[in-house]
Amino acid sequence: MTSRSPARHRRVGRVAVAVALAALAALAPAHAQTPMEVDCQITYAGDPQAIAACVRCVNVAAPNCLCAALPRLCGATGAKLTLSVTPELAGAKVEGARVSVVAGGATLERTTDASGDASFAIPLDPKAPPKVVVKSVALGQATKLPGLSFGKGSKTFVVALDRDVPVGAGEASKRLVVPLPSAKLSTTPLAYDRSSDAWRPVRARVEVFSGSALAFAFDAGPEARTLPMLVPPDKVGADYRVQGASIDGSKLRDTTSLRVPPPGATVFLTLHLADLLTQLERARVKLNAMLAQAYGPEVAARITQGVRFVLAEIPTPNYRAGVLSVPASYTLGFDAEAESVFHEWGHRVQDVLAGDFRASFSAGGRTDAPWAPDPDKDEWRAFDEGRADFYSQLFTAALRYPGDKAYNEEVAKPHVGKCATCPGYLASAMVAHYRDASLYRNALEIARDFRDVHDEGVRTLGHPPRTYAELVKAKESLVDRQLADKRITAERAAAIKKQLREVNERFKL
Ligand SMILES: [Zn+2]
Image (tube, rainbow, N blue to C red; front, side, top):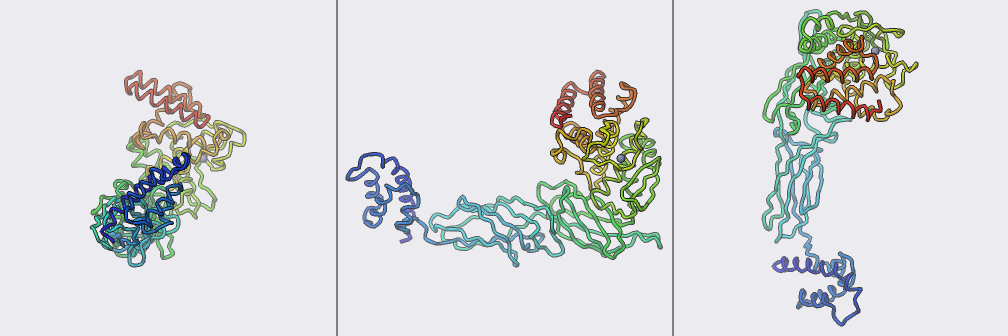
């Protein structure tokens, strides 16, 4: 029986063609025997049952006709290859991982069980082993790993493998262990202890974010804890944002970042959990280090050292004359909190870099709604707030705080055409221009260019840009000047102007 299998396989192929042609044959006048019926005689010579089924089916344009008429002609013997795929992270079995396998052209997906195995039953012709490839393993919310959690809202990590599984003739089962690319993450949470003026080890909940999505979370401390860390190949060198919080009720926190190392490496993460004021002081140090590079130490000091923090029972932060008031309830661990603090700091930056007389509207404060048109359609006030929003995006992104996705083209889309005086909308247009990696390489370049545009405004308008339109005008004038001074190439000048025009067209500004 089995020795005839390959031949039968070929016959089915021919019959399939014959069935396809039957539709055409049906249009021709009936003969005693059509060419396709003759083909049946030749194909199944010596097998009257098969010839009868074949003849019946050549006049039916249904591909499964032959299988329905005589299952043994279909080539399927019912034999299956049992394939068991076991992904491992640094030697640990992974439950709840989604394994994707391509076998004989079909994609199959199974989830690993409590023993870490994903089992596949692949239809098998023993004489013609199928091509089997383990395509990928995906870890996400359903995945369980000792000490690690991929909680609600977790990002799904897909590790592409494309690993061929050699299947020998007559093989009925196959087991494959797939090591996932991993690094070691060694975490030490420290908390500031005022009484001893020292950092002491504590227990903490650590959440790791990729973009704005939670990637994974774990508990660490008081001793240093080393955990395997999945390294999707496309993530090497990327930065995760890390948020740590003490879990003893002391409400101490830290927000920092973690660069994804290559597989096999060890990365050390030290969290300095602290109260809000200490965190703000750390933010000051980070901002100062960035601005010193962008504008030099003196300007950076005026922007950062000149600000005094005050914790107050207020709903949102505000900035007035060197005093940055922050709600005492803040932790800086949430998107809106870090974004709001850096928005207010943005007003300070603007005052120092290119201060402007502000007419009838209050300086600072956060009474504006980012996605509502200014109540008086006041372009100046809307732009001033939008510019502070732009600084919040620049600083949260550069210093790896949450909240850096508050304003961009994606979130602005629903407001196109109806938000010309919405601060968030204007900020999104500025972000769309400055976050173009083909035009600006990093945050320092953006910070410097933004300052130069304001200086250009003072030079050509007599004051810093007061509306979005004036900002664009000043930017174009700056590009022309840089080109005339041969500080940029004609290509770059053209590219900047083109992109600026296109952004404004898309935003209808
Ligand atoms: Zn503001």
